[in-house]
Amino acid sequence: MTEADPLLSVRNLEKHYPITEGLLRREVGTVRAVDGVSFDVQLGEAFGLVGESGCGKSTTALSVLRLEEPTGGDVRFDGDDVRAYDDDELRRFRRRAQLVLQDPDSALNPRRTVGESVEEPLRIHGLHGSQRRRHVVEDTLERVGLSAAAADQYPHEFSGGEKQRIAIARALVLNPDLIVADEPVSALDGRTKADVLELLGRLQREFDVAIVFISHDVDLVRRFCDRAAVMYLGEIVESGAVDKVFDEPRHPYTQLLVSSIPSLDPSAPHVGVEPLTDDLPDASDPPSGCRFHPRCPAIIPPADTTIPRDQWRGLVRFRFRLENDWTTADDVRAAVAGRESDDPATIGSVPATDDAVRSTFDLPAKLADPDLEAALTTAVESIEEGDLETARAHLAAPIETVCERESPTLETRTEGRPVACHRYDPSVPGEPETDLETTTTR
Image (cartoon, rainbow, N blue to C red; front, side, top):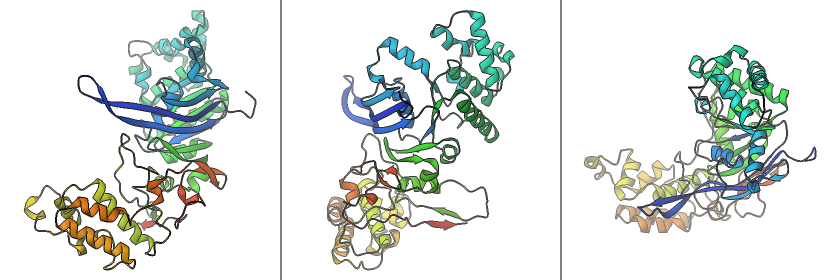
């Protein structure tokens, strides 16, 4: 590995899980937990993976370390193909690449002393001499802010933050080149969280170790990491230096994450980005095209669309809810009436009228585009007749988008950093907007 080469290089990583049913475990589907993830990590760098729970961050970490066998893709460590390692090579790799989990208790045997737990990797990897191992253990415990005497105590004698320090010591005891830290502070309180983050940063500089820092907390990743990648439904949608990704986000999902960070000043206005829906798609049946498009407030209309953006978004929301959330006319009536669908005494008396639908989805009394107006009117009439399939068909063709048809590629198109969004692809037809509308509340 030359100085310019990455310590860890991941290309098109995939991890899929079969969905089975019945006594014969017949495969009926696939969960695409990680689906084409690529990134590099340099020696001594802190690289963040951030996204909502269930986006595939932890599965990516386990697959990179081959604690889960990848379904596809390429993982290279110091230039070597990790997926081609035999048992001996894999053992040597795991001496140089360690894992810190969210729950330190999962790494600590309650029946063993702290010293025995921290010493275990040294024994496994062949460091001979009990006195020599003891010296390394005590030195490492002191480096993470604990006393050497802690080696003779048991895990239950320590607080959560102290146990996480022990878990970090266990990872550092082999002097690795890479640590994968999976939500290492999410279970800790504020002060303890800050202390452990400060410890990780100091140890990173002291040991010149690369850290892959996995978190759902944008603010933590921004404060701790040098670079970061944002994940959504198994894919990376944006990556780059943290000051660019989080201070000047380009992907709508990144903008949504950043806007969700609360302000420390209760009197300051909160500027937010509103998704089309809060519902998360199922990883076993991800949306076509851009996986974020059912929630995206910047979804691209066709090139010939003449109605304002807010009206286009309202039509898209109506169409997607009709396709994904509602199975009967009563479901529609309940939604536009603001009632729960398990109240049959009142729902049946509330028609899914044209006015109610337009009011719910912020649409005017008449759309300026005659084709869209005709499609909306006919769809509502079909709903009133109880025919949702016909209503869906009337809306599908005129309310279509490139975001639904085609998957964007993660390419460097804007300000020198990769973003997977059609809005930055000059070859994509339509009228993409690069600045999202925001809402301001106090």
